[in-house]
Length: 162
Length: 451
Image (cartoon, rainbow over all chains, first blue to last red; front, side, top):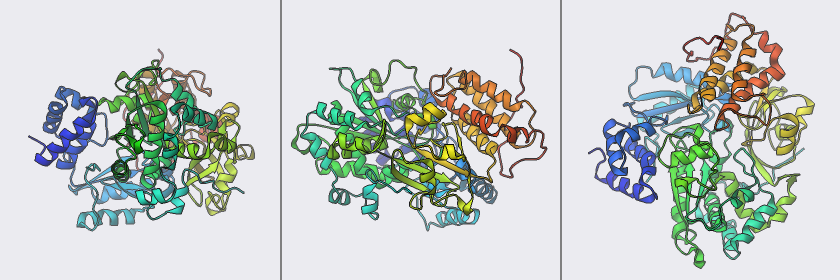
């Protein structure tokens, strides 16, 4: 079993909320990722069972979406936007700095992402899907450090609630 | 000079500290529109929306009442799906509405559902919107507790439930049929139309897909009356819209203005964009999200009104999702085009060959243009690639693809050709990169081969 007892209760509730069980693949993948920090093959097999499809179908769906991490990636997902507003306001410099700073830190996964819908506060980034705007290389590092120390907390790994 | 006309965003100013709570919502006229709507016949609400002239705020600008009218009579169940998968680069209005006025979305959903006779609605929330999802989930729960959702809403006999569904990082799911695929648990690859979602949408049932801002406008149309709403705006672009202004302006942000104000007013007004940074001037701007063709800092372009039809018919650009990106004289337009190309190549779902292959080509060739290793005919090469995706390279575009993502990826290329051809040709063989920013260099070098 992948889902613990509490998560399994939530998983069944999620499946029941949809007219067709297969619709629950994405929310269940978020749920598994929240529990484990990543989406394992084992979790996808269990999701397949819960919604009544082949495991390959769950993999086919989940492999389409960038938020699902199919390898362990550490505790913090740092998503830095470099799309066209962040591009001209310092986003690439933030990305470059964080990549270098956390290159050997197994707890911090730095990724370049597409537009986060935070262009009014560019350059923008997210840490475990919490928004941080008007950043700079130095400020961004300080934010990540605050999460590492536990001074800041994200809702969850996958940003999933309830 | 111009200023905001706050209708959909009014509550954000009145209750800046708690606009998302049910108490703030009820204290500022919240759910009045729903109460009024439930006292009307569904057809009468549809008439008001038709009279308002409301057009979709997601990008295509299709008349909302007309979209609803395509639902086949007597065919149930039917579904309402709200497209809250905001991902068009530089658009950030729906995220704001989701985080700061989620009850307004719930109220709009209830009104729309009642008007079209639907009892199960879905909101497809962009996966990255953790706070927005939390606020919306709280709003749905609170609304249900107070009788604004669930069985027999406010004693009217009308039942409605809302399921919130989170995306997981895929721009293409903002395209309505890709969204429906995703909501069914599939990869978010768009469907061939017809059939349109109104005939066979979610689970092959009649389905209306409306954008978050569109839905958020409905309570106000009911309370103001469609005719009064239609007095705002210009021509067939009625009412107000939230424009997401970003880039090299002094005051980037979301501004709700009456349609018909000019781009110059939006960019320069002290209450709005506050002018270009450092007293500079506009070199070019992208008027309607990344998918639109560009306009320049010429007086002719800056003085164009925010009128969906006029800009499309006369200049081949669109107001799209309402994102206006402003670039000053220091900007290298090829760099912006390359980053957009990289975006479209990354987000192409891979279903249609011209888009899957073509977006990659465009990205790679633009990469070597901005890195000073381009060849003399490179711009023409990607125009040719673009022509395979969107034959004729005209607007409104034709397409060899199922959905508009492919043609959207061609827009920056055409814009470069139209306005900055000499500048791009001047970069040919420059030998040094035009940027220091780190990039993941594309693999395999593109070269033209004969068929």
